[in-house]
Amino acid sequence: MPSTMIFLNLPVADLERSKIFYERLGWKIDQEFTDDAAACVVIDDNISVMLLSQHFFHNFTQRPRAITTATVGAVYALALGSPHQVDALVAAAVAAGGIEELYPDRRAQERAVGMYGRTFLDPDGHQWEPFWMQGQ
Image (tube, rainbow, N blue to C red; front, side, top):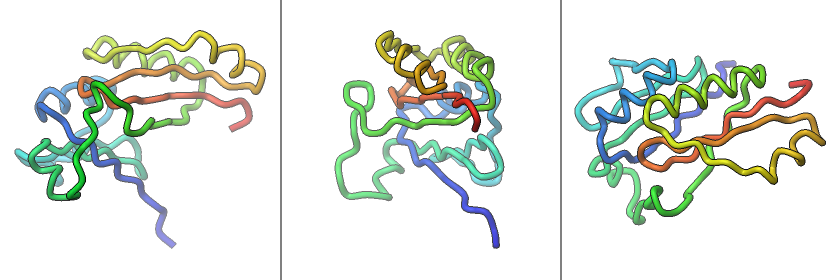
């Protein structure tokens, strides 16, 4: 049975800027599924992000899109193999123009259950939560 794959479809204001941002995280652009309206960012074999120009995104829904620089439409949690990998991904995101969001109250709660996580926003305000969980 083939593996289940996840494709996150994210509207972006500037497709080229977003492609560069995600490449700087160490993720690859799949040129086979990339054109002037969309780009496929491969996180791993089963997870990809489809960056869709705002105009093209409207082909997938009739509802208004969330303005993610002002509101949260979703939080994208990504389990990683170690706290070091979490720190490295957030550092890469910040270096590429993302913004780290800090939630100091969350740290004590995470330590109590054997977790470590951080938060960053991409240039369009999409919220990513890389985390490590003890025993995963």
